[in-house]
Image 1 (tube, helix red, strand yellow):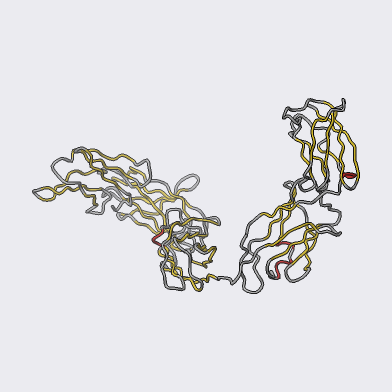
Image 2 (cartoon, helix red, strand yellow):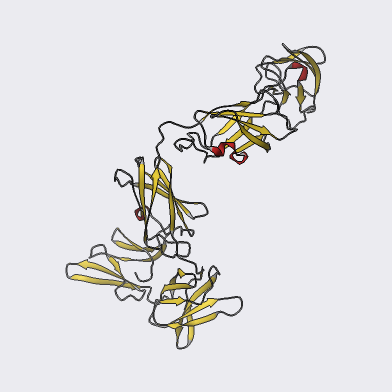
Length: 448
């Protein structure tokens, strides 16, 4: 219909139900007896915003009912025409003139009156928001009013580029944010180097609605990929310029995978980490910004990156920072954009968090934290333990309470329970740490 509304007609047990809207819950419009005819068809024959219902009978077509006969202006929509203009369209709902008003703090500004249902406001400044409403005018008096829309004039959207993000997905970037209702799978077409047009599984907005992520039903062939966007709309319902926009990208298929083979703490001072790739990385591998290191949720500042050879690099933490064997892993993230030097292959494990543990110095350096353990603590960690460190915990009567071994990342964790699983009570406990490096004795306190 000229109103721009969507209607659904349902026939059930001799009655016809008419609803408005494409999204649940639909607005109920009318119910009437549909006996004596087939399921009716909806039309707006005279383009006045009123919807007619027609049913086919043995005697020919029969007009069953008019509805929305006295509805005022409605379905107001704006469309950006460029940096200084907006087009307003609406359904008048009656033969009376419509008054176009631009709302502002205080009194609204009347732009004019029209017997049509379209108006172009070309007096705008780009990106300055405005609000509009349409009123019916009968004998000089304002009657029904339409919905209010907020809009702004802005240049029409353009398709800037397309990127292959995986074997079966792409990302399309636009100059303007897209309208959430302005796209559908049928409006994007993708052909690969083999000339195959791929079925599109889904389209999803991303990057503040300026990008459209395209998921395909199958993998793209290696080589050029042609992408076409057809009549997409931006957040101000501005039409894509040109409406059928095309671009081209490439799916690069590397000969071999590219990934991180190993990350471990540096064995010598100064402190840091050594990364080994399975193939030589590009020059960005020597930039500090390519890496992020965190420990226990806090960032670990990096001072520099140096090449060991073609495939290995050393990350150096800032002077004065000590890598600690507390049983808590260091988390190393590598920028997903880092590629192989020879063929530009992306990382196979892009986005992965690499967990690196630092082994402790052994029994002579072992200490407990937190100490004392409070009611809110669920464990004590004996830090700086080596791989062969064994810890025995006793009460003040000399009875063995718990035995710990198999250090992970320099930490042995005691869950504050006896060997039989019972929680220990408040008090002071003795611990003895032993390994090939020596022995350490100490005390820990538990406050329940």
